[in-house]
Length: 269
Image (cartoon, rainbow, N blue to C red; front, side, top):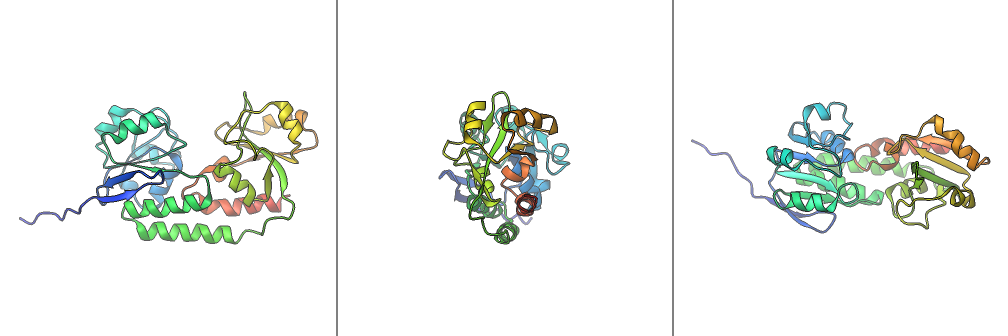
C-alpha cells in the first residue's frame, strides 16, 4: 500500500517575531480575526477553515460553514481544542495576550501585527505562503498595491479630520493605527494624530481640535445618521460623515475595495 506523502512542518517567523512550526499545508485552520477570515476564504481556503469568531461576518456564509469559537477577546478553548486545528491565525491588537498564550501552548498560532498598509500586504503574502496559497497571496497583494498607487497624490493641505470609533465615552483612532494611515491616504490630517492609538476624548478636546470634518465609523460602534446632530451641536462648522469602518480598518482582502472607497471620499469633498 502506498503511503501518502507527508511534508515536514514549515517553520516561519510571524509578524510578532515568534517562531512557529506550521504543518504544511495546514488542513484545519481557526481564524480569530474577521478581516483575516475573509482573506482565508478569498485565498481559496474556505473548506479548510474550521473555526471563526462570532464577528466574522465576511464572507456571508463563514459562520455557517465553520464553528463559532467565541469572540476576538473571549475564546472558547474547549471548542477550539475539539476542532483539532493545525493552524490558528490571530492578531496582536484584536486578540488578547493571555488567550493567545494559552492557545499557543497546544496549537501552532501565527500572529499578525499591523499598523500600516505595507504590513498588511506583508501579512497577505505570508498567509499565502504558510497555507500553500503563495501565488494567490502574492497576486492579491500586487492588486491592492496597484489600486493604492492609482490614488490621487496627497493634497498640499490635508483636510483636518477626527475619526470616531466609539460613543459614551467618545473614542477616536489616533496616531500609530492602521486607520490613521488610511486617513492620510484619503487626504485627511488626523487632528488627534499626536495621541496614541485609541484614546478617550472629551467634547472640549474635540472643539479645541477644530476638525473640518468629523468621520463617524460604522464599526466597532454602529454610528448612523441619528448621531450626526449630536456632533453638529459640538462642532457646528464641521462636515459630519458616516463612513464604512470595514474599509478603513480591515487589513485583509477587503483592501481590494478600500482605495476606490477612499477616492470616492476625496471626490465627494
